[in-house]
Length: 265
Image (cartoon, rainbow, N blue to C red; front, side, top):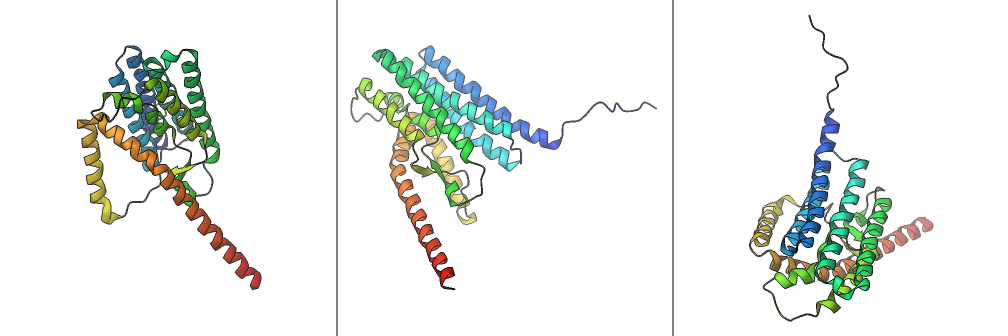
């Protein structure tokens, strides 16, 4: 009777769980690079859509990895590399081809500064995560790179949208926006993180309806929906910062009360 080959090893369940999220991440890399190709060919609408799709994939791969228990150090580093390409390098090239090239070397310098800030923001994120869980996990330090990548594209998206309240001077607005977003990326301003949000069962159906409605609007009124979402996100930054400082202050007060009570005892 023929004996089975003992040298053949099947892929473990753990390894197979790790592969799927990493495949999604690599697809995100390909889409991010493709967005640069679209911009080089002058197909800026497709380049915007490619970055948006890369953002959706970025939001899914980590959640899928945690859901199927397929997280890994390789996946974490790969995700950061993908973010640098899709939300750092790609938006910088897209906006350089569209507008920043018109101001010469200064435009290229601004693009480089933005990419460097994205890389620094992700490096800081990698070294500050992984500690004990706390309420601070509900907040980012600075805006996340996917949000930054989409925000710097806002002038380009505005030019394609049907929301035309004014005629902006893009040669002025685009550099100012790039510098502003670069500062927000590396700042320590608290912004909301939805990674560990807990949804009550009673609101699941309503939340599902809202998500479906949003993606429906995104498919039908793509650029209008992105513009409104971007403005809403910017308006939420001071709200999230205020919320963070209120929680932090209350925790400090409670901690001081506990210490004082222990000293009395």
